[in-house]
Length: 195
Image (cartoon, rainbow, N blue to C red; front, top):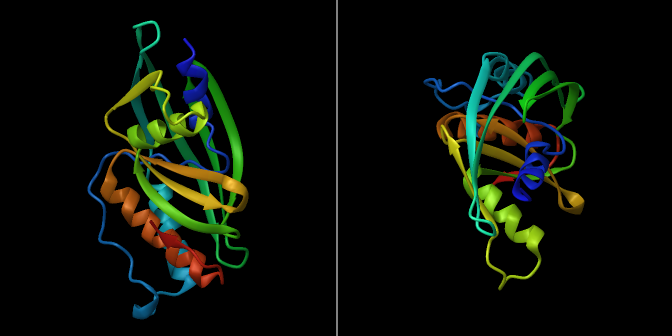
């Protein structure tokens, strides 16, 4: 099926992915006007990301070209999260299981160069990426995807149309982390906003 390689690329978001277990989120962090320091904001981000645990979900894909349906189980787990206020970076280990393949990575997410953050339902983000990939706006979509449970992304937009993202199992936590990241990016001296 042609759709699955495209979705694997979506899963391979350029810089950073964070999975959150569905759970009640604490109240959002205070913003700059309330005196939240960079060190305190980075500690909050590190705490939230360290507490995530493993998230598993199914992606269901319908291929409109051949009428087939498929489903695959995925999981993402993060560990060794270290948010550093001096360097404005977040280091972590990511373990993903995609299409039965295990991917283990030690990664660094730099707040430098992030121009904005967007919180998306993953289903909508996948559809938007498919629109971009197909090129012709009049061409009908060739596939669609559903996520069970519904998933959300915080997408970091960088210059040159580069993106990195964070995966979440609930919108409230995605919004909370996006708010904290935006605040940290601004305190690091960069200009970012949440769209």
